[in-house]
Image (cartoon, rainbow, N blue to C red; front, top):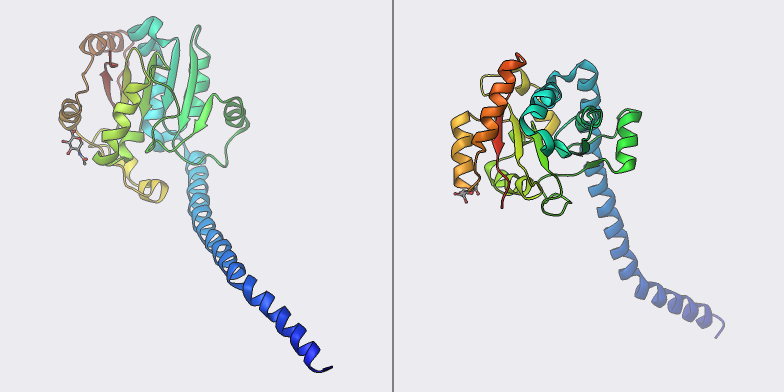
Length: 254
Ligand SMILES: *[C@@H]1O[C@H](CO)[C@@H](O)[C@H](O)[C@H]1NC(C)=O
């Protein structure tokens, strides 16, 4: 009796344990898996941001076209005028572009930063906290309603997307605009921008030729804005502005 009781109770205890242990082990496996996924996810993210911060210290040349957007703002003002009242910029270093745009009279500006900005300056942190800048993977639809912005400007980002994603992202950029989309994209002969890319974005930038883009726009029923093209060229000439990126002007949908 005496010996059976502890035996029983231990078996009962054991039974209880064996009932809960499959659940427990499943929970442990799930938690473990989450940890592993989290580790790799965070690991890669951490790497990206580390390399980012290093390259940012080295200079803005890595994101050639985001810098180009900042230089082109006066020319864009002359081209788009009132259509610059509500601008969305999509691209790396968007905090700089948004800050620059916000200095313009009668221009409200928002930004989407497609890459990790873990280590960023206080100005950028403030913009993110205020909601002026969002960090968002642009392989997914933009978190904005149709026609949320008068003008959408995208730089560099498209060079890192395969045609499969471009097919979705480019129409989505057009979707959130009312008066047009301006694309700043790399020039194929520019080798400088290609060096650090793979480690940074997981995919090398592919600089496409002008004719490649024009064909791509046609395939996707996206129409170039000839009037804006012309105005932009004229304003560039007047300001002696020579772009170091290819610039395309697309019409919004009506
Ligand atoms: C992109 O879209 C175009 C037009 O709809 C189509 O012809 C092309 O095959 C698509 N490309 C990819 C990679 O999905």
